[in-house]
Length: 316
Length: 316
Image: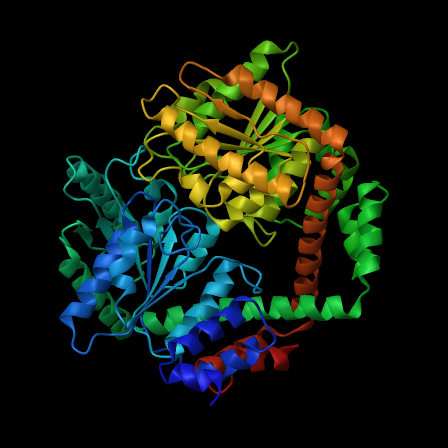
């Protein structure tokens, strides 16, 4: 039985190996993704983003645990951790992993950290490919956790059908995600650590900002009838987790009924296709050119004999 | 007089307009960069990165002020703020800009925030092009401020000849940048907010990590003779700023004497050239293809008649 069939059959080891091949851009990647493609577009891709220190990972932990304990049989849930500061990722030090251990132990949960940018020319594209694999083999939901800063993280959040932005009181500067333009991408807002004394004022600031955003959205370019909920959570005692799950489920229904799901799917697929085209063009060009040509021109640029643009005109 | 000549002559308005054209990818961009290219490779590009809440912006402020007041005539200093949470950028709210006002008022300082990804296919490439312009018109140093998380930010930091990584005590999780692998790129480490009670333990943890890194660097792959200094600063009362300036100057001397400057320059130029080649290939392909072809194939993918890879093979 092929590795792809094994993965579709629920074999975790086969699945891990497939993902590694795709991350490394091995030559089989194309066939793997081709073979899995007919099975895609079933899982709900949920993005969870927010500044480090917002307790995002603990929230994911609670969210996953609640989904599993309230459903029988437990759903198959995948978590892709892209946040370099997340305890899910390989970069974690200082014992952070311990916090997440309980979720690791559920047999229906699959956790994968994205460490490298892969061979797709960017971590966003690599994450998209891995999400396709997890979708095809039947995970639902697929949770992508990113840190709420940086362009590549916003791109990754763009993959999600539902994006949850997590804030917390007392992170030095108030409401960091709002500053980073992260608020723009929220379908659901969460104020975590709601037991902290300043949680109320954080929630009020966010509510004011959301009101402005909703007004803009409805006044200038009416994009839909979704009202962004603001949910207060406490990842320590699981406060607010039920409300969060309800909000996610109600957003999923909204997406399907409004046609937003299909629009989003088209947009994601177009981005993925554009990236494939770009990679393919570069591959072809590299195969038909001598590496020395480029190196000679690079030297000429460094010697200021020609400019970079003149070099490109000579090369192509 | 052309805008480029005006900018080379010190005209700020002309300079701003040139940068906007380049950010927007206007057709003139190529000629502008071509014309400026012979004047590049003079300024010292300094990257300053660290988590938001580390007081990075205030530190940049102090650093710039000190450079200006200690030199006569004052140097021409450019600051490119890529950090979306920075008070330099357009995304800033909540009155943060006030903190930076004094630096804004020095006539020899030029501040520019990078808001959009530009037409270069990424904010890292756009930042590289803007840094080239600022270098050509005579700014030295050129300071690039980024937030220490996310792949694009690490790429941007890669443009710098000298990278300063800023940490501060009490940012929720200990030593966030270390986790994010940011430590790997540091030429100079700073512990800011050194007046805080926990500053000492933060500094000690960092020193231990640096020791490990230096050992690795010298044991496994000897990369040079630079010892990464750890400097304690306090951006409120300018404590440690003199030491920081000395460390930056001594790193610049090290780069030039060791040949690292030229190696770094070659590496940056190769990255820039690769990006130009990629953009050029995509441009040519788009000009020779009908947009409808791609849209028809996209629809076929969405209908699961073909896979994304089959579509690319048909297109190219």
